[in-house]
Length: 308
Image (tube, rainbow, N blue to C red; front, side, top):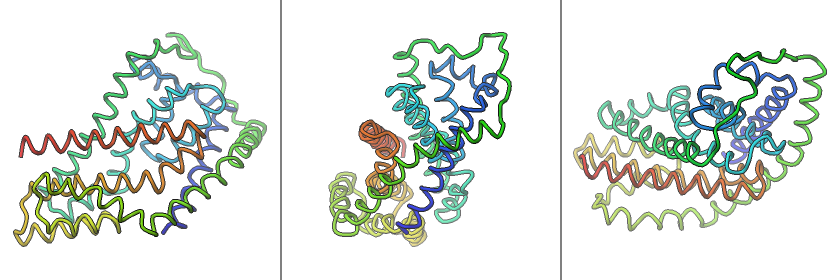
């Protein structure tokens, strides 16, 4: 599984870096100006950041790779990188749920009521992360000046053999720095998780279950989350059908399970990717994004306790 993920990630990172560099050389971003300009004005983010946001809807890995390319070229700042990765949370979750049919799988396993509630809460948690990143960018960044004025005239598209060659050459230099770091980091962290780190993570969430009064039977669902999210869903679905837990218990367990999954993803995968793409900045990006995800989940759990 780890090697499959590593191979998939290398492929997606390679595609993202290559496309970003070719787009830059061919001035394709200028062709998107009529589409991204309104969002740039409202968020104060640059066109490059908005392009990465759009890309995250289809491929988070390719989006981060493109963002790293713009950052390493000096087109965007550290603050813009952090805000853009936070703001991409909602389109990333929506894209993953719809385009990868996770939403359909969730409803089929958990049932229409619990499945729909859980999907909605996931969207809510993702939205508030995007929202506070948007508010921060609106306050902290100066008004965005796009590359064209209101009567825009886009640059001529320069998608030629020479621009593709230049883009590939620039991408190669970037990938020679990124891929080795990504490979080593993923393999090292994967080894640590397979030799005790996973148990330490699980124990961190034990007090949360007791504090929220969630039945002990739900621990099996949380354990299933370590294997695959569908395993956890199947356990919850079984407990619901047998009347052992309530819908509220199911939703709360799923939210706590998602916190465990997020923790594992950041330790095993996301941190490695951020560090390989952004260097030292990647540590800060990973920590801020992880803290944002956990805070959003806590807020969501509080909402469930209040309403259900």
